[in-house]
Length: 225
Ligand SMILES: C[S@@+](CC[C@H](N)C(=O)[O-])C[C@H]1O[C@@H](n2cnc3c(N)ncnc32)[C@H](O)[C@@H]1O
Image (cartoon, rainbow, N blue to C red; front, side, top):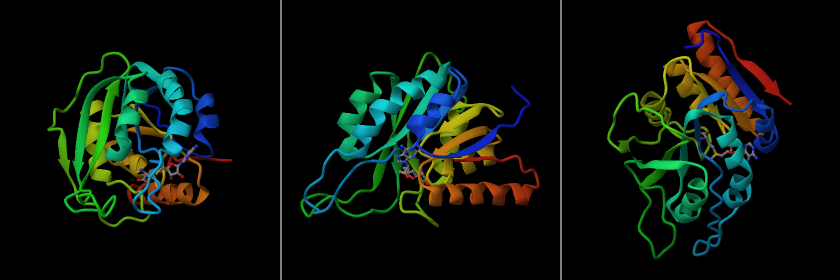
């Protein structure tokens, strides 16, 4: 295990910033990409941002991961068939984990049931041992969200504990408000976060900064552009 602390938040486009990260330097990627669901008007949707961004980002995620690296990717059921095909071009799918949100977050249309879960793909580049075995359904209610897309830290902590050791490096190229980065702090992992929206990356710096203040060991490198 490396003793060196690495905590970096970049503000910018991950398609560009990923190119500066050395090959085979990251243990685990955990991310929640833009879903690209356009539900306005409510009865139509299109496959949007994900399909434009991910074909460029997936080969970079594959490149920066170590040979035994793992990759967790949040998904939406409505995009799953498209995402799965793209994901499996690079990674060996091991699980689709269900995050049971314990309450519904609206309807896709007037003709559909309510949403109560999201899927999380888990795949590996080579061989990666599970550290803590857990059931593939995680129950956790969304609460205290600061941005609409924010994911619960406790769900991400489970992914981290299942697939990494303390001191390892975790990358989130679509970091949003920094939930993965806070989960890394809570579990003593190093991290690299990238977020294109400066408001969200400021929020993630604040969340990590608050943690550092509470435990008085600030090491965050703000790599804002
Ligand atoms: C679904 S949200 C992530 C939310 C995050 N999991 C959280 O808990 O706050 C996806 C994020 O990707 C960001 N994003 C979209 N395209 C990007 C790009 N090319 N590079 C970096 N970030 C990007 C969006 O601004 C958004 O914050």
